[in-house]
Image 1: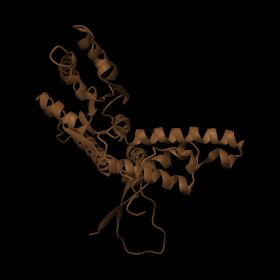
Image 2: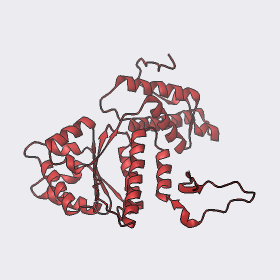
Image 3: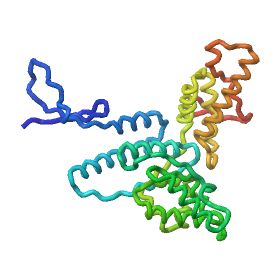
Image 4: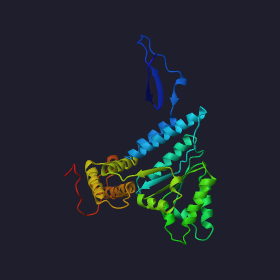
Length: 317
């Protein structure tokens, strides 16, 4: 009996049987012996651009594998159990929650789970009205726009923070009913700070069971924040000098050491990158320097920071 082994190339799983070595070249694989994974190839390309987030990447790949086998079992007329894909995203701002939600909406469309796969982003103001009856209407209309796609509600915990006379609870109740009325027609993702989301779930005992998938988004390290900054710089067709990178890294390391509650991570980096570009523009006008190299280069002097003592990272101390 021949032994078999598998290898993956360009998102295709190939099966090869060990045979005696022959002088002529092996014949190419018949098409029907190949299993293409085009959605996985697209997914991997997007995941590769994300800095850090190893656990999130693992969960997304695990989800793809589950969806693929789910479809294969359907095709083979094996039993399949309906799965709810509503999710909770927990983490500080700027940790990639919206980016992952957009990535997942594309994946669900590619795998045939959602016909449209569009992403609707919303917050408290998009659901809660100012008078009786308006909240339920706004929430139903929002869900209607989301049918066939993903509804992403950021800072969802704010829906339960308005007190007894607030209409936030009405929005939650309406969402729960819409999840039942439009089962399998859309996916709801609730996102927010970790502690606040835990409190939100405790205040609404019926909610946890409706969200079988929970993803936690940790804060980035100083090195990861620097890599995000470099990626943003490259995307804008700029470059940073070595000194500029060192200066930025020391500052980002200091922010990590300070351990600010609700630190904005990637958003903080983006704001600094945009500020560096503005400062570079001011410098170039002052220097009257407009050649290609000058237009692309961000120098250490373009990075203006708070004037306080910065702690050097361990590898520089």
